[in-house]
Image 1 (cartoon, rainbow, N blue to C red):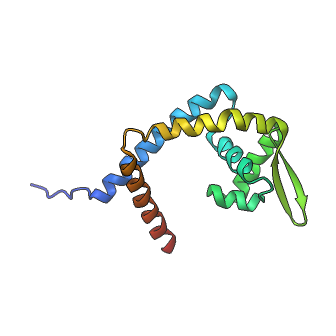
Image 2: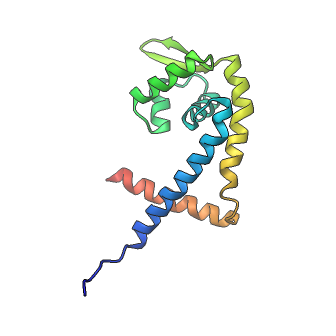
Length: 144
């Protein structure tokens, strides 16, 4: 009989986290389809909306994407009239347009509420515990 190695709780937790993320991402994409927005674009609207004047690099760092990826995303959003880049020395500062603010005010709170509702099956103290645990793993990975 072959000795099979059992999967560790850490690996099983990772697999479950990835599965939950995929389900939430799929639901988010579906809910935004009618607005012709992606979850990444909503992330940009939320971050720029709460930090008007943020630089492209600061946005890329906040969203954990490369500067090249954020440039493509911003090009599309600028073309759609949702935001504008304003040169400030060697950096571009980002601002929502009037249309971008309207979309932000309509979409971001609803989107955030939908995402948060998925965790309402957990009691508030369990949500705080999950956040602490994920923050712990995140910080440990930054040290590696």
